[in-house]
Image (cartoon, rainbow, N blue to C red):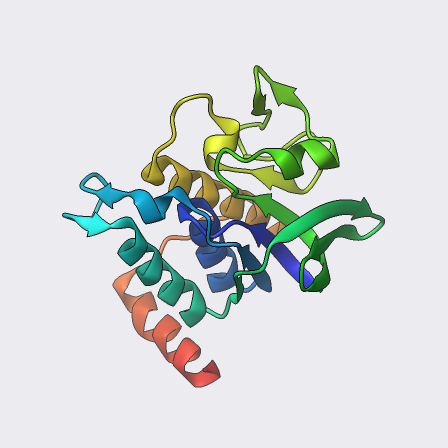
Length: 194
Protein backbone atom coordinates (compact mmCIF):
# COMPACT_ATOMS: atom_id res chain seq x y z
CA UNK A 1 0.00 0.00 0.00
CA UNK A 2 1.22 3.47 -0.88
CA UNK A 3 0.55 6.69 0.97
CA UNK A 4 0.26 8.52 -2.35
CA UNK A 5 -0.38 7.20 -5.86
CA UNK A 6 0.28 9.64 -8.69
CA UNK A 7 -1.06 9.04 -12.18
CA UNK A 8 1.06 10.82 -14.79
CA UNK A 9 4.76 11.49 -15.20
CA UNK A 10 4.89 15.01 -16.59
CA UNK A 11 5.90 18.11 -14.60
CA UNK A 12 2.83 17.96 -12.29
CA UNK A 13 3.20 14.31 -11.39
CA UNK A 14 6.96 14.42 -10.97
CA UNK A 15 6.83 17.59 -8.89
CA UNK A 16 4.18 16.08 -6.61
CA UNK A 17 6.18 12.85 -6.26
CA UNK A 18 9.35 14.76 -5.39
CA UNK A 19 7.66 16.66 -2.55
CA UNK A 20 5.74 13.73 -1.06
CA UNK A 21 8.60 11.22 -1.13
CA UNK A 22 11.19 13.73 0.04
CA UNK A 23 9.00 14.37 3.07
CA UNK A 24 8.53 10.75 4.07
CA UNK A 25 5.36 9.58 2.31
CA UNK A 26 5.55 6.29 0.42
CA UNK A 27 4.92 7.43 -3.13
CA UNK A 28 4.12 5.43 -6.26
CA UNK A 29 4.13 7.12 -9.66
CA UNK A 30 2.50 5.56 -12.73
CA UNK A 31 3.87 6.99 -15.96
CA UNK A 32 2.49 5.82 -19.32
CA UNK A 33 5.00 8.31 -20.83
CA UNK A 34 2.47 10.11 -23.02
CA UNK A 35 3.21 13.64 -21.80
CA UNK A 36 3.26 16.59 -24.18
CA UNK A 37 6.71 17.38 -22.83
CA UNK A 38 8.22 15.04 -25.45
CA UNK A 39 7.07 17.55 -28.08
CA UNK A 40 8.25 20.63 -26.19
CA UNK A 41 11.34 22.77 -26.06
CA UNK A 42 11.43 25.03 -23.03
CA UNK A 43 12.79 28.54 -22.89
CA UNK A 44 10.46 29.58 -20.06
CA UNK A 45 10.94 27.06 -17.25
CA UNK A 46 12.64 28.88 -14.33
CA UNK A 47 16.21 27.79 -13.82
CA UNK A 48 16.40 26.27 -17.28
CA UNK A 49 17.80 28.50 -20.02
CA UNK A 50 16.85 26.17 -22.85
CA UNK A 51 15.90 22.51 -22.62
CA UNK A 52 14.30 19.84 -24.70
CA UNK A 53 11.17 18.60 -22.87
CA UNK A 54 12.37 15.00 -22.81
CA UNK A 55 15.68 16.08 -21.31
CA UNK A 56 13.90 18.02 -18.55
CA UNK A 57 11.78 14.94 -17.81
CA UNK A 58 14.91 12.80 -17.43
CA UNK A 59 16.34 15.26 -14.90
CA UNK A 60 13.05 15.28 -12.98
CA UNK A 61 12.86 11.46 -13.10
CA UNK A 62 16.37 11.22 -11.69
CA UNK A 63 15.31 13.49 -8.82
CA UNK A 64 12.27 11.39 -7.89
CA UNK A 65 14.28 8.18 -8.17
CA UNK A 66 16.88 9.69 -5.85
CA UNK A 67 14.29 10.43 -3.13
CA UNK A 68 12.80 6.93 -3.33
CA UNK A 69 9.68 7.20 -5.48
CA UNK A 70 8.47 3.86 -6.81
CA UNK A 71 8.27 4.91 -10.44
CA UNK A 72 6.37 2.52 -12.70
CA UNK A 73 7.54 3.66 -16.11
CA UNK A 74 5.32 2.57 -18.98
CA UNK A 75 2.55 1.32 -16.67
CA UNK A 76 -0.93 2.57 -17.57
CA UNK A 77 -3.62 3.15 -14.94
CA UNK A 78 -6.88 1.68 -16.19
CA UNK A 79 -9.20 2.60 -13.32
CA UNK A 80 -9.37 4.03 -9.82
CA UNK A 81 -12.03 3.14 -7.27
CA UNK A 82 -12.79 4.30 -3.75
CA UNK A 83 -12.92 2.04 -0.74
CA UNK A 84 -13.12 2.18 3.04
CA UNK A 85 -9.39 2.82 3.46
CA UNK A 86 -8.68 4.98 0.43
CA UNK A 87 -8.32 4.06 -3.21
CA UNK A 88 -7.62 1.04 -5.35
CA UNK A 89 -5.52 1.81 -8.41
CA UNK A 90 -5.86 -0.77 -11.21
CA UNK A 91 -3.12 -0.83 -13.82
CA UNK A 92 -2.27 -2.95 -16.82
CA UNK A 93 0.29 -4.60 -14.52
CA UNK A 94 -1.73 -5.17 -11.34
CA UNK A 95 -3.27 -3.11 -8.56
CA UNK A 96 -2.26 -1.09 -5.52
CA UNK A 97 -4.03 0.51 -2.58
CA UNK A 98 -3.38 4.12 -1.68
CA UNK A 99 -4.52 6.68 0.88
CA UNK A 100 -4.28 9.59 -1.59
CA UNK A 101 -4.41 9.78 -5.37
CA UNK A 102 -3.15 12.64 -7.52
CA UNK A 103 -4.28 12.82 -11.14
CA UNK A 104 -1.63 14.41 -13.35
CA UNK A 105 -2.70 13.21 -16.78
CA UNK A 106 -2.59 16.49 -18.66
CA UNK A 107 -5.82 17.32 -20.45
CA UNK A 108 -6.96 13.69 -20.34
CA UNK A 109 -9.84 13.77 -17.85
CA UNK A 110 -11.09 10.21 -18.40
CA UNK A 111 -10.04 8.85 -14.98
CA UNK A 112 -11.49 11.89 -13.20
CA UNK A 113 -14.78 11.41 -15.02
CA UNK A 114 -14.93 7.66 -14.43
CA UNK A 115 -14.42 7.97 -10.66
CA UNK A 116 -17.09 10.69 -10.43
CA UNK A 117 -15.19 13.96 -9.92
CA UNK A 118 -17.27 17.11 -10.28
CA UNK A 119 -16.61 19.20 -13.39
CA UNK A 120 -17.07 22.94 -13.98
CA UNK A 121 -17.17 24.28 -17.55
CA UNK A 122 -15.48 21.16 -18.90
CA UNK A 123 -12.56 21.02 -16.45
CA UNK A 124 -12.14 19.05 -13.24
CA UNK A 125 -13.40 21.18 -10.36
CA UNK A 126 -10.77 21.56 -7.62
CA UNK A 127 -10.42 23.84 -4.64
CA UNK A 128 -7.36 25.95 -3.84
CA UNK A 129 -5.62 22.84 -2.44
CA UNK A 130 -6.06 20.98 -5.77
CA UNK A 131 -8.49 18.56 -4.07
CA UNK A 132 -11.43 17.38 -6.16
CA UNK A 133 -15.01 16.80 -5.02
CA UNK A 134 -13.79 13.39 -3.79
CA UNK A 135 -11.92 13.51 -0.49
CA UNK A 136 -8.20 12.77 -0.81
CA UNK A 137 -8.30 12.76 -4.63
CA UNK A 138 -6.36 15.62 -6.22
CA UNK A 139 -6.20 16.84 -9.82
CA UNK A 140 -3.48 19.00 -11.37
CA UNK A 141 -2.32 20.73 -14.50
CA UNK A 142 -4.23 20.94 -17.76
CA UNK A 143 -7.18 18.88 -16.52
CA UNK A 144 -8.15 21.66 -14.08
CA UNK A 145 -7.56 24.59 -16.45
CA UNK A 146 -9.38 25.60 -19.61
CA UNK A 147 -6.42 27.15 -21.39
CA UNK A 148 -3.44 27.70 -19.07
CA UNK A 149 -1.48 24.65 -20.15
CA UNK A 150 2.11 25.33 -19.25
CA UNK A 151 4.86 23.20 -17.68
CA UNK A 152 5.61 25.63 -14.84
CA UNK A 153 1.94 25.93 -13.90
CA UNK A 154 1.60 22.14 -13.92
CA UNK A 155 4.70 21.67 -11.76
CA UNK A 156 3.31 24.23 -9.31
CA UNK A 157 -0.05 22.44 -9.19
CA UNK A 158 1.76 19.17 -8.40
CA UNK A 159 3.73 20.84 -5.62
CA UNK A 160 0.55 22.43 -4.21
CA UNK A 161 -1.23 19.07 -4.14
CA UNK A 162 1.77 17.49 -2.39
CA UNK A 163 2.03 20.20 0.26
CA UNK A 164 -1.70 19.96 0.96
CA UNK A 165 -1.48 16.18 1.33
CA UNK A 166 1.46 16.67 3.69
CA UNK A 167 -0.56 19.25 5.64
CA UNK A 168 -3.41 16.74 6.03
CA UNK A 169 -0.98 14.08 7.19
CA UNK A 170 0.82 16.35 9.66
CA UNK A 171 -2.32 18.11 10.91
CA UNK A 172 -0.90 21.59 10.31
CA UNK A 173 0.18 23.75 7.39
CA UNK A 174 3.25 22.04 6.02
CA UNK A 175 6.09 23.96 4.43
CA UNK A 176 8.90 22.37 2.45
CA UNK A 177 11.57 25.01 2.82
CA UNK A 178 15.16 23.81 2.77
CA UNK A 179 18.20 25.71 3.95
CA UNK A 180 21.86 25.12 3.12
CA UNK A 181 22.23 23.36 6.49
CA UNK A 182 19.53 20.90 5.42
CA UNK A 183 21.41 19.93 2.27
CA UNK A 184 24.07 17.89 4.05
CA UNK A 185 21.49 16.21 6.31
CA UNK A 186 19.10 15.33 3.47
CA UNK A 187 21.86 14.21 1.14
CA UNK A 188 23.47 12.08 3.86
CA UNK A 189 20.20 10.39 4.80
CA UNK A 190 19.36 9.62 1.16
CA UNK A 191 22.83 8.24 0.47
CA UNK A 192 22.70 6.12 3.65
CA UNK A 193 19.32 4.67 2.62
CA UNK A 194 20.32 4.13 -1.02
